[in-house]
Length: 327
Image (cartoon, rainbow, N blue to C red; front, side, top):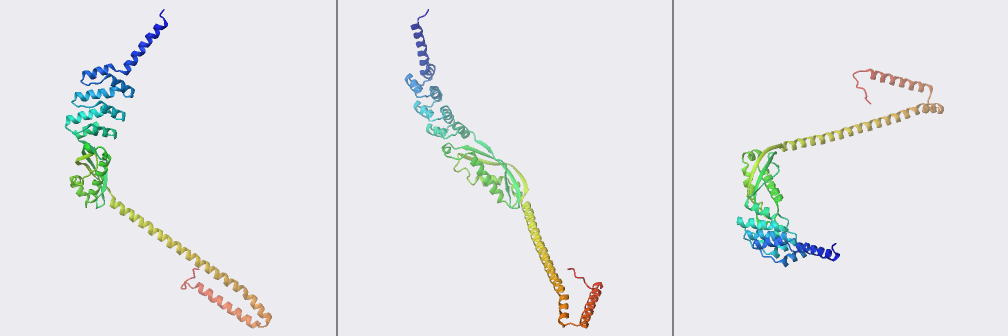
């Protein structure tokens, strides 16, 4: 049987080789030396101790060296520790160098740390990008709505990429220019006849100022006629005026009904007073008899006058030519 000391020795040797293989990536070191990139074994161990993956630094440096770029390892490591994407930065530097675009390492790392895709920016600098706006609706002076869609061809300006506005700002500014141009047209027919007028006016405003892009061209892709906003506004105004007039008429009718009810109440009150006054007449006549101020003949004469008055009222009520009292 194998002794315990031998087992411990074998285990120690295995652990040593595993630790050595982890601290010193020999295969990566050999690849770097073969590619013309000098890197010491001690530097690889130091990167491990700094919690830096050596392949994330050495492989991009090998790629840069083969492309003719001289990049220092400590700068690449510093960008990696800052949270940047070293591989994408190196790819962007190589693409910019091949395309003849002036791009320094400091500028590339600044763009990458700012959250922008530096490689995509270099590609757009070489090949312009086309941005399609959503349908933009505006109203001409004659009240007709016009809906336009534009295509914006832009090219990235590397020197303005850090701190410059993005695509959303370009789309918003172009949309504002389209609305302003359509709104200043006397008729929607002018827009339909000359859609290139919108492009010319918008391009003259310098809408790419303060952005990370340079506007190369603005092409009106589609122009359609929308709603008749002016007619709809007039219809809505007429409907509103109609409702106001109806409300005022209803108010006047309510006031007339209230006045009529008030007059009827007054008439009822007057009739009640007359009835109350008539109720006191027999009592007054009886008192006059008791006091001796009224005789029998006087009473008969009063009855005759009342009968004559009732007859005249009956004749008047039966006369069709006399208007009746509605109240």
